Image (cartoon, rainbow, N blue to C red; front, side, top):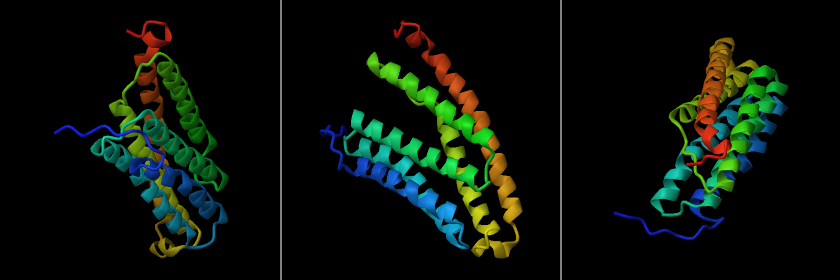
Length: 201
């Protein structure tokens, strides 16, 4: 059964989920930078709930017939704001090395440029499986690191004595994320080469 297409609205349920993701970003960053015992697990919960909206907004938009350029822009922007902002804060508190964050951020800037070039030619480049896997691994790794931060700063998880182990698990998840970031970025770039060379068809 087809869903009636509705006009784009900034206040649509799907777009509100994107706005909530953006609004959650400074909250997670503040909780992370304050570093008070117990705030790490709060940051992890807020971050993971915000990450969940990334998987919900597209589904809601399709179900309600509200897929639009505005919705795509809101979804992509909210993702980059949440992940980029929290990654920078993680470098500040020593949860991640700069090279991992720089690799992820540079890849996102390159892909954003490709999308802009595609939009100028009215071409839509669909998300690829590697990119989706990268997104899931990124959110998982960052969530684990936020839990590690709680354990290492005297929060509720400190009682488990597993802070260092959780931090190591989060670090290697982010190493995997970095590998997927490079591979998926190259896959995306390779697929866009005909467009970038002026042969969109």
